[in-house]
Amino acid sequence: MEIDLVASGNGVTFAIDCKHWKRTVGQASMSKIAERQALRASRMASESLFPKIIPVILTWRDESLFVLKNGVPVVPIHRLADFILNWEVAGSPILVFKSILHQKPLFQSG
Image (cartoon, one colour):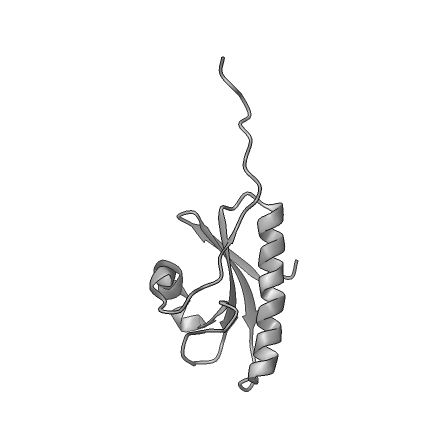
């Protein structure tokens, strides 16, 4: 699915697209990249048992963490650990996909 990195814990999974730009990209390009990552995360939610999936763009550049209009966060690599631990208090609404599949029990009693 072209997801570069998957980080999961505490019921949340981050579908991460890693980018290494030589220069900052424009708003239109960033929006297209984020839309494609949101589609990948949505597909992952429809095909997996992860309860919550958040699409993320991870950058190598040293810039501020920000959330695009569609709710996809753009996170500099040096802020990734802090973002994963504290994403719920990011300040801007973050796009979260909830899995539509539910794990069925292997055994039923009775």
